[in-house]
Length: 122
Image (cartoon, rainbow, N blue to C red; front, side, top):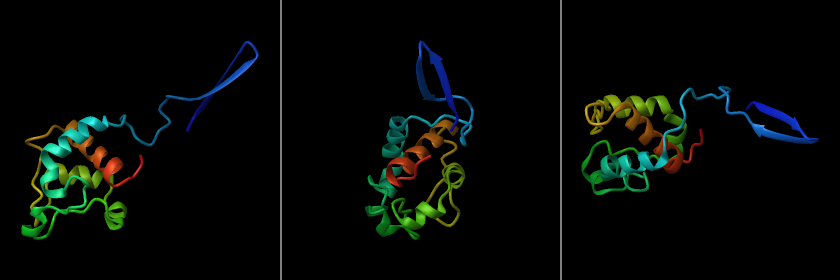
């Protein structure tokens, strides 16, 4: 994190910089947008809580991903999740969403899943 210090009238104010010293080149998408996309397109298979405990889990082989598991939190990078949502996952019921969702929509839903369901902070 980059810090800037301004001095004025014998008062020092320290605030975080909004400069480019960040590990993410793009600002985080809005959570409400990602949540709306998740609830509309992902919840049926992955569940409202992201745990994959849905009716679909009983009929799909392999079952939908449980985003809440420790294994998923370690294994799923942001890039892998974006690629999976965009291109789908061969050998699973995970379809490619690139013809339904924009790249910005896919980034938003991945951001929502990671932050709110997986509890992985940027």
